[in-house]
Length: 246
Image (cartoon, one colour):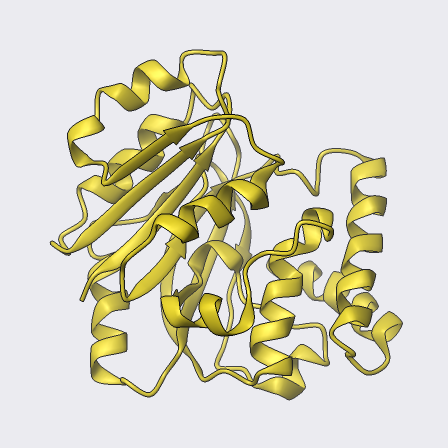
């Protein structure tokens, strides 16, 4: 089974090496690795060039933000399954992609898999939050649940059927896509009870009070767009759910 993994990067000279090596040293043999760079101006491109032989596609050009770049990667992907691993993140061991592939092979009726994630400090790599998920369904979405996006692997056909990341949703484009897939279209997803990703803190949606406020507004927009009942209550539950991760 071919697994396409997309890494989006812009000026991540410090961390891109860890991300790339966590993918190219996977035990699974059939990986299509795609890197979309937004014309980095630090040393990112020099680092990436060292791994060029492992890349199926590499694009470096201006884009309209993170999710536009991800959509570019999706358009290039030819794998049976697509996953997203951003430049600050790492797969936790060499067998993660094999376990993802085996899950799809053993349960061909499923459309997606997801697992657990740790938030770590950017420099020391200290675990500060633990996102532990569970086997969820549509009703859990309505209680504020969502899978950890960096652990989500979906069949490529879903993007063709249900659409890519919406570019008018700001930092909630991934939340919007997951609401669309899990709630509106009720895809069949399987929870893998394993730690899949270490994610460095400092993402687009949690950098400042203003960023947090804007993230909440986009989350609410995503809930309304996908016609989730009692959107304000769901939004409150989504935020409260994070407290259990500390």
